[in-house]
Length: 388
Image (cartoon, rainbow, N blue to C red; front, side, top):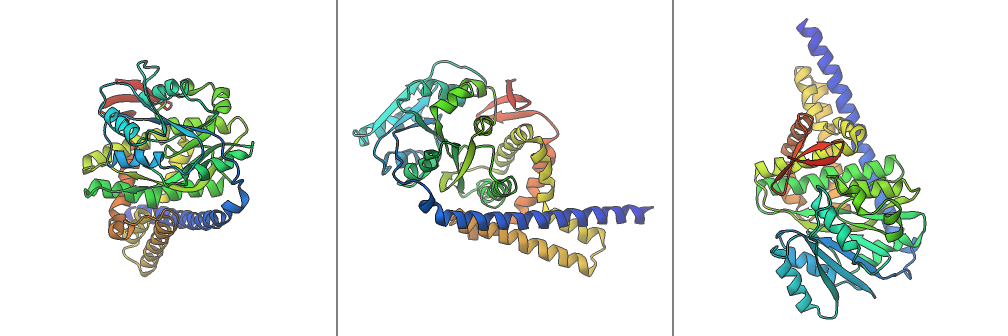
């Protein structure tokens, strides 16, 4: 009986490892396609399209390297734009940073909007609804408060919207880790797991139907067609909801060739696990089918299980070695060639640990419906936040 059970486990593990290998190959093909299209993006897009833009940046508290990240938006090589910062509390410590930017860049149009109303459980989106009412222009860009950009960011991100069929533009991003282990694991996951997954979805589905919080560029008219920010103010994954709802208007979501940067907090292991669990449960509720399909991405776990179930047979070690090589190839091609992550070489030795922890988090995500976000606890119900 035990031999039969072991044999079944071995067959399942081989199927899992084979599926993971196919997934890694898909990631490599997607990355190669993305690199090829990035090289020709400037030729295809309309460089003369430079409409006025309102940048909406909801902020709260102090993020790592926050001043330099916000400052990068003031340095844009772009003819006409405004930056609108929004906070819920006039006493928030981020207010002093905005005031410092206003003093440093008196020629830039920089507004600070105090958003007193709480329109729903997602306070960031509640603020965005109030900030959008103050925005002057038709073209809007929303990105998180910890995002740092290059000087040509606005010019390159807005270009795809010259085509009417494009409803929203979003960007990949790389994480800059603090010295802590949790922060390094977070950055490694962004560059070698999350972004490859986005590219795989982009390749497999011939586009994406969601947005990333790193950048969301869209028209005010399309925002109004989906009912404004108010319609997503109860959702945890607001970036996903915004992109998906604009996509359902019959518009495409364009994955830009631009890569932005975020400086990560100094997570300890507990903080890392809590952040990942919140993200995992948010994705689980937003894309349940795709989230369950992540089981094929745990190649290291499957190949190790093959070795154990086969009693260390020679062929099982070949499967393990092939899995490790494919996993390393994906990490290098996406993390280095696409994202330009300068820290990847120094933290790549953590990749096996990160992948095994990712599986543990994936399992844990099915064990409950609560998340912790900025010190508050919520229950998730079909993607919506219910304050506990």
